Figure 1 (cartoon, rainbow, N blue to C red):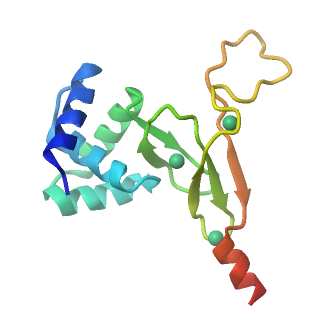
Figure 2 (figure 1 turned 45 degrees about the vertical axis):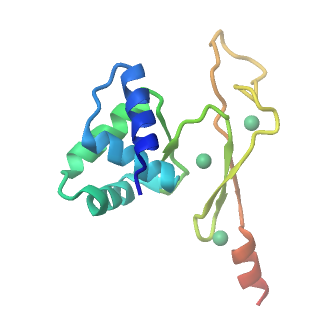
Length: 146
Ligand SMILES: [Zn+2]
Ligand SMILES: [Zn+2]
Ligand SMILES: [Zn+2]
């Protein structure tokens, strides 16, 4: 699954932010890149399936470190486990189905961050507005009609 080209570019991204290139970090990036919006447990499961024995703690540490360095982005829909995706800086938002918890990416209609400004910023320098749209996905709508 891991191509030499991709492994190289992940390694370069790690080095660019001053992180050591480790096998768990590369495996985590590969898994999250292949399949965005996974929970930490799902990431751990897939990393183990791909590179063998790695402790859950090592995988959680990798997720946290990569998120702290903004290589990964994490979001947490209410009532659901934290989910991870590769941070692309595209400021996309998420549609979440209330019934089946499916997550779908949607581009931000505004584009630049932050895309929603409160009436009063209380002197904060705002970076980002995290938008989650809640609703019912087409599959669940179809099931309701049946
Ligand atoms: Zn649904
Ligand atoms: Zn997303
Ligand atoms: Zn937006």
